Length: 94
Picture 1 (spheres, rainbow, N blue to C red):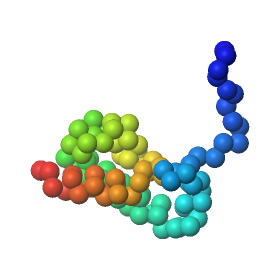
Picture 2 (picture 1 turned 60 degrees about the vertical axis):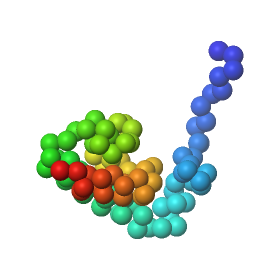
Picture 3 (picture 1 turned 90 degrees about the horizontal axis):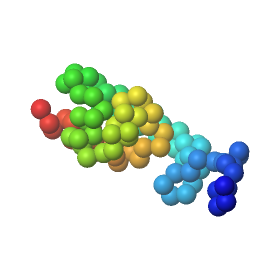
């Protein structure tokens, strides 16, 4: 088709600031551990309350796919402030 460019085989995923995600993680090796710790707490609270990704998304104002990724522990591309906000919101809601 005209106008569609072929996929780049060596494409590097980039973070919100345009930097490569691998560069972000190497610059701050504890960042991924922090993200996983928050995601684990979020998942623990969600499991304890019987909440699925849709409910977490609705309660916290995030995208349902992002909520599902967080609950699955796929947090490399999720900014730390979002994880923090989701956890704080779930802690407040009974």
